[in-house]
Amino acid sequence: MSDFSVTIQMILVIFLIASAIGVSVTRKLFMAVIVFMGYSSVMAIVWLFLESPDLAITEAAVGAGIDTVLFFLTLKKVHALKGTREG
Image (cartoon, rainbow, N blue to C red; front, side, top):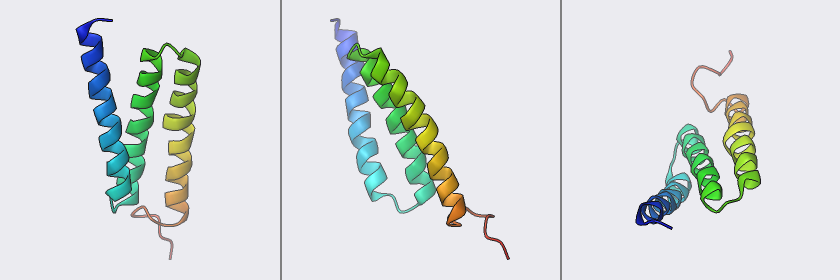
C-alpha cells in the first residue's frame, strides 16, 4: 500500500470522526441531515478502500440516497423546513 493511499485513508477517517461529532452537536436539523449525507458518502469510499464493493454500493444507495430522502421528507412533514408550514 502506498503512502498516498494511507494519507487519503487517514483524511477520510478524520472526516468521518468530524462529521459524526458535527451531526451530534449541530442545532439545525437540516444541517444535520446534510452532514449525515456526507458521512454516508465518505463511508462508502472507505468501504471501497477496504475492498468491499458490495458494502460500498449498499452504503451509497441506502445511507446517502434513501435515508437522506426519508430524512428530508420527515423534516418537511414536521414543518422543520422553512416554507412548509401551512395555514
